[in-house]
Amino acid sequence: MDTLKLELKIWRQDSPKDKGEFKTYKVDGLNTHMSFLEMLDVLNEQLIESDSEPVAFDHDCREGICGMCSMVINGRPHGPLKGTTTCQLHMRHFNDGDTITIEPWRANSFPVIKDLVVDRSSFDRIIQAGGYISVNTGSAPDGNAMPIGKEVAEEAFDAAACIGCGACVAACKNASASLFVAAKVSQLALLPQGQAERDDRVVNMVSKMDQEGFGHCTNTGACEAECPKEISVEYIRKLNWEYHRSNIKG
Image (tube, rainbow, N blue to C red; front, top):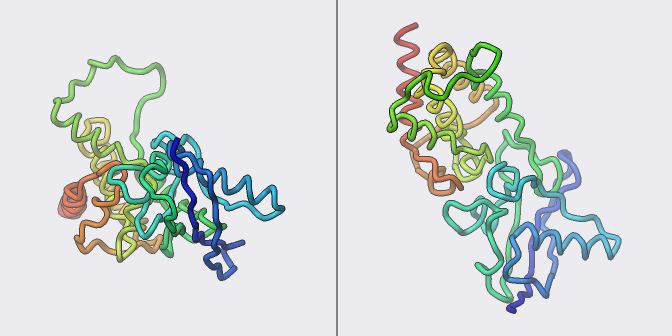
């Protein structure tokens, strides 16, 4: 079984008010079948055994679903593989003796809490501003009660694949959240269930995005290139259309 010895340059920052700096660690005997997060687990075990502070990083499902495992690896959000979250990235994609630089998302709207952990509650506030629908309470409706065309359902599902990780923000030179907002707005605008709040939704969510300090989209396409769910920038066009539509109607 192949093993790896790596040099890790990791951003360490005790709190949001601290300056922070890169610190270098060496770790060896790594199994190439490990995930990237399992490799960090090994490092943290070594740090704890030596009475050192372990590296703080976000994680939850470790199945590419929750979007928590957000970090920049060698300059790329979630690492070198396309359509892959950090937790799905395996060490076989690195070489023995490699130096790997690991840092948090870099955006004013995602302030660092500690080490590799950032505060992404700004995304939650954008969702609270309009990412919901009005439905009657009670038992779930029959699946065939509201027919939806296959093409529309697939397009809505593609938008719904967004896991809200923030890689689009980290990749964008303007720290724009347009792809995230576009996916959430488009998903609900495509479906009949989302029509009740359709006009207010896009205005409120775009307004909240601006209030949270995210930058403007300048169509570089970096967000799509780094999105682990490969959400298309076509949804940003749909977002702009929805926004102008709501303003014309209003």
